[in-house]
Amino acid sequence: MASETNVDALVVGAGVGGIYSTYLLSNKGFNVKCIDMAGDVGGTWYWNRYPGAMSDTESYLYRYSWDKEDLKTYPWTHHYVYQPDILKYLQHIVAKHDLRKYMEFNCEMKTATWDEDIQRWRIVCSTGETIICRYLINALGLLCKANYPKIDGLNTFKGQLLHTATWDDSIKLDGKRVGVIGNGSTGVQVLTALAPTAGKLVSFQRNPQYSVPSGQGPVTPEYRANINARYNDIWGNVFNSTVGFGVPESTRKTMEATPEERREAFQKVWDQGNGFRFMFSAFGDLTTNIDANKEACEFIKSKIDEIVKDPRKANALKPTELYARRPLCDSGYYQIFNRENVDIISLRETPIQEITAQGIKLSDGTVHELDVLIFATGFEAIEGSYMRVCIKGRDGETMQDHWKNGLKAYGSIACSGFPNMFIVAGPQGAFANFPPVIESEVRFIMKCIEYAEGEIHDDQQTNGNVNGHQRSNQGVVEVKPDAEQSWSDLCDSLVEGSVFTTTKSWIFGQNIEGRKANTNFYFGGLKAYLDWVQKETSTGFPGFSKT
Ligand code: NA7
Image (cartoon, rainbow, N blue to C red):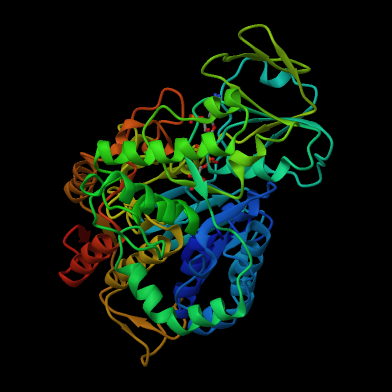
């Protein structure tokens, strides 16, 4: 007979958000379980194992802020951490805080149903197990479900087909003829990493994107000592900033500088490296002023001309749209196109007609024969993970129903009609560095749970299934529909005037064919988000009802 488990809280997903949720819930004495469909911890970093996979947040910030001792002692060697090191770090945190005992892998949540009679969630897993819990914390991941574009003949290809988000590292690419579709953050990384060893590498590029140097390289012991000495201030600044990337956030207006001053300022951040630094540190209005933005575009395009020797390739690499997507950075991306084994095909000029057994056939009849075809085509971002499971709230409403007119979640963490259910890194969260955003959301969720529980008294007797804590005034919390709508309206209003709305990308859900544009992020900044959370939690949770 299939087993049934009762817990206080179920965390679904063992990535950055799921690990922290499990840590906080278990520390508060909840009987907690964390499941993940993957074979181990890591979330997005478990699956995205493609060559060159790297976080483009500086290493000292691509980690949890709350383990102060660990911040100073855990080793990292370069300005940015590559995927294997991120995975090792997350495994280390899980081991250090003894969290593995709460975790079960190869266990996927298939359905979650709110049971009104017992005021609990009832989760059925791929293993056949049923889990019953008071709190359901979904940390399913916003960049998780791989996006395969619809291209004729996709299944006819006789070579090896890979997607960067479900990478198989047993496949060797050295000396092979490799085609890559996609040139976002992932495509840029995988192309740059494969160029030196692939026999032939072709980027099939639809929209070129702007990229700047990352500044990747080893750090000195002095650099690390300096970071260690300043860690408290560093995190203080991050949580007081707009984008949380540890880079200065300028307020200087681009068009008030002379052309020489502008070039000098752009050159300085180009030399220092990091995409967010380039977008936010030289000037403060690249994302809000089209003329300012165009100056940045011209600067980067002039760099492409300087770096890429073949004018055909250089022209193909130069974007025509504004610099208005998630900013990219690289470790020598434009440089790879000076190699003889690397080519670029502009799909805007010659679109893909179909994929054939041999490779890619373009609209002009040319066939590019390939041994391996890599999809670096991104994700069904944000809702993708939620659409492949069935979560039913009050009155049988599903998440699919709830989001049919656009994604929304109050403070990014809760949806009306889904009591005692929370989302980590859901829609309409702060557009900022993910680890501090995720931490902020998990801490907000914990506050909501504390509110649902009533006061928690550590020194009182155990009450039923809760280890060592007694809860009084226990209840069920649920977001009010009008509060959820007003958060969504706020997100819409904050994006007005942003140049980001001029491009089509996953930021607005428009990377998937046929999807309507939706404001998927809160563009008010991390600090403003935290101020809002502080107000919500210190004024009696006005957006929630408690029964
Ligand atoms: P992105 O940023 O969504 O990039 C996907 C890329 O795939 C982008 O270049 C797309 O071109 C391209 N794409 C998608 N569909 C097609 C078709 N049908 N034909 C040609 N090219 C296509 O995904 P990433 O994985 O790079 O990055 C996602 C986030 O993960 C990133 O922001 C980081 O936060 C980590 P398009 O621009 O749509 O023309």
